Amino acid sequence: QVQPVESGGGLVQAGGSLRLSCTAPGRTLSTYSMGWFRQAPGKEREFVAYISRGSSYIVIADSVKGRFTISRDNANGTLYLQMNSLQPEDTAVYYCATKIDTTTVTSTPLGYNNWGQGTQVTVSS
Image (tube, rainbow, N blue to C red):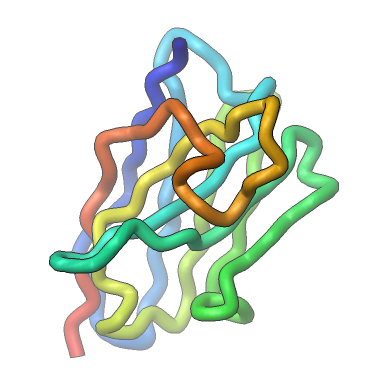
């Protein structure tokens, strides 16, 4: 079992940028395909981005395409989410998670098992 930990959230003005990181202290995430999700108050958890182990396959949600980039550094076992041109509607708790190997589901929470505790991103207008 691996326990991801997110960091890098915070308060930013509209139009600003943040970079989220996800690691697993004492373990490595390099052997997992990974995803980012977000959840705003009163809403369901929403898919943001997915990246395969070797970064050869990437999926970005339409709502953030062109503004958010997912990447990873397998040498240090870290997953990233670069968020540019942030808008108030991006305000949410952002989670990283490991994808279940035996499923092809990438864009719903059902395809993932180990979840971090989340990091809050707040975008002010």
